[in-house]
Structures are given as C-alpha cells and as structure tokens.
Image (cartoon, rainbow, N blue to C red; front, side):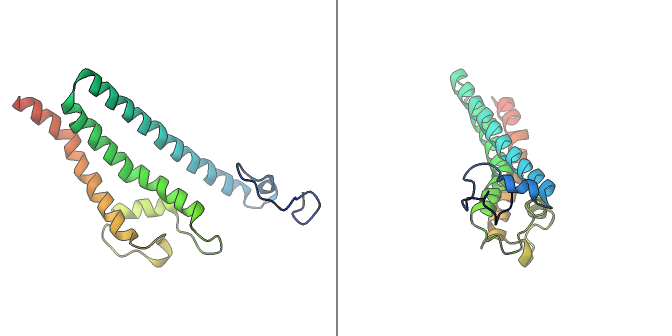
Length: 159
C-alpha cells in the first residue's frame, strides 16, 4: 500500500486507525499511545457513570449527607485530574497543529503537581492561561481530599 500509488483514495479515515500506520516506522509507538489515550477516556467515562449511579442511590435512600460529603467531592476530584487529562487529549487531537512540537500529556499532568505555580516551559504549553487553569484545578483537587475524608464523620459525630 503505497500512499502515492493507486491503492490510496486520497481521503483519510474518519473513524479508526488508518491502515497505512501498519507501514510506518513508528507504528508501535503510535498505536500504544493511541490505545492508552482511549483507555483513559473510557476509564473516565466508566468512573463518572459509576459516580452518577451512586448519586441516584444516595437520593433514592435519602442520604443528603452522602451527596454533599461523598459524591460531590469525588466528582470534583475526578474531573479536576482525569477529566482535565481527557480534555488535554481531545485538545491535542483537534486543536494542535501537527507540524509543531507537542508536549507530553503525562509530563504536563505530573508537572501540575510537582511544579505548582511555576511558569510553564514554552514547549509544555498547550493553550493560553494553562498555568492558571492547572493551578485552580490542583487547588480544587487538594480541597476535595479533606472534604472527602473529614466532612461526613464530623457531621455524623455532631448529629
């Protein structure tokens, strides 16, 4: 299958992986990266669905404390970390130019915590105001940890 030959129609695949990746030198790197990103997207979808089911369960059983002290901080924490990673995956797929150097999403996520508040290197920037958005998401995620661990026991002890 030569891209310049008669086998290629000139139209890219709208869905799935183009078979021409089978001929590429970096096929394994591309396919593994693609599968990992799809796994993260599907994992976030599954975890969000599970949390929404727990919300319906709490409401059905009339557990208002669980809605505010368990569901809400868990959902905020999940979306601040993994939801932001999925946002970066889609942003990189659809909004970034293929001809430019793209930052590693894993390194971006790690640097959110390890280099909190530090200016981003130019090669690690996906979009403008990324530093401020990442800082706000980290602060929200950190606030959710004691909220999840302490709020419900304190409220139950008081009442």
